[in-house]
Image (cartoon, rainbow, N blue to C red):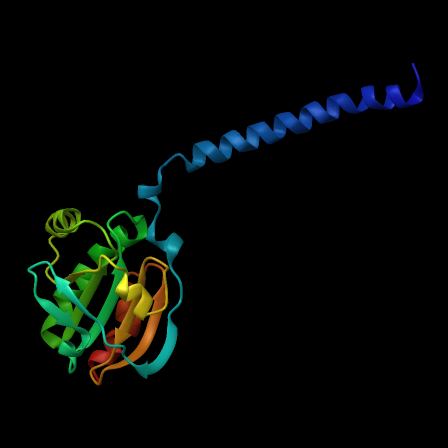
Length: 189
């Protein structure tokens, strides 16, 4: 046996151990990740807000009752515009957070305008009923809102103050604590 063949033979156990270790790690990662995408926690998607200071864009869409709704209809209120989809797990996870915040602050001039990004109306209606959502839900089959806000990340949320100016945005899911910390002070202005 030559020296090169002997070295290859000596490396074989190390190669086998390395491959075995990679397989073991791969299986462990797979099993750990097998909990499913619907069970991923909201905290895994949280991002800090982006400060914005510009007039809110004009956007007009239809709600679930067929009424035309424009963002300008809400001047004088603090508005959270949320772009979401029924198929999006972080979008689905943040809806109960929005519901709780809306129920707490709607009488103080707070409104949520949830813009569903292109799913069939029947799916949107089912989700809204299932979640017991009472805030404004708009249908957006052409993704007009995503184009208007120049962002295709789902979910994304934009806060408009009482004067009609964009103040902050989140590209990703947010929770009740985030809303309390950043949006509640705008209600006091």
